[in-house]
Image 1 (cartoon, rainbow, N blue to C red):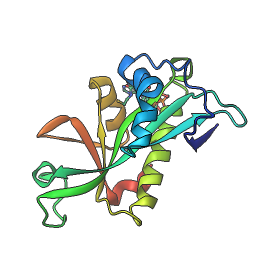
Image 2 (cartoon, helix red, strand yellow; image 1 turned 90 degrees about the horizontal axis):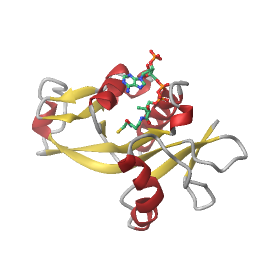
Image 3 (spheres, rainbow, N blue to C red; image 1 turned 180 degrees about the horizontal axis):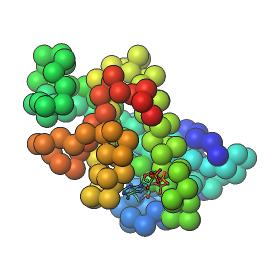
Length: 162
Ligand SMILES: CC(C)(COP(=O)(O)OP(=O)(O)OC[C@H]1O[C@@H](n2cnc3c(N)ncnc32)[C@H](O)[C@@H]1OP(=O)(O)O)[C@@H](O)C(=O)NCCC(=O)NCCS
């Protein structure tokens, strides 16, 4: 398995992760979002094959500083803290439960950590779609924001734990 930057050469029509909003994003909205540069998309696929088996998106974002109370004290004194957002992450149904979610999450965290040297980010933040997704991210030490319970973060000093 490999993770590559998405290009139009990839086949996304058969992708079904069981969550329609995540299927629709990949199949119907991704091209527009890429044109607008609102995210970058990375896809999981077999070596030399173009069928998308999983994907995640990364965007530059920010989170109100008060969200980090009780999570991290040593932050710059800005009203908003720069972060990298994993906006979406999914594995197709036929491949779920084989450890691939952990593989692409680790890939996203590594990429965000490396890129924070180029564009600063104090943390990685994820938008969880439901309580199952929250449980998945908590397994990898992401912490829930008390002020917004469907968002979780991994601080920069934890980036290398995955
Ligand atoms: C959530 C998702 C990405 C997990 O991918 P996966 O490949 O099935 O998960 P993995 O096989 O890598 O599992 C990794 C670990 O997370 C756990 N895990 C997987 N899904 C979980 C869930 N929904 N809740 C809690 N833990 C979960 C697994 O038990 C496993 O732990 P283990 O190693 O101790 O057994 C995948 O199920 C998916 O795409 N779901 C639909 C979309 C979604 O909810 N995306 C989340 C972001 S919004």
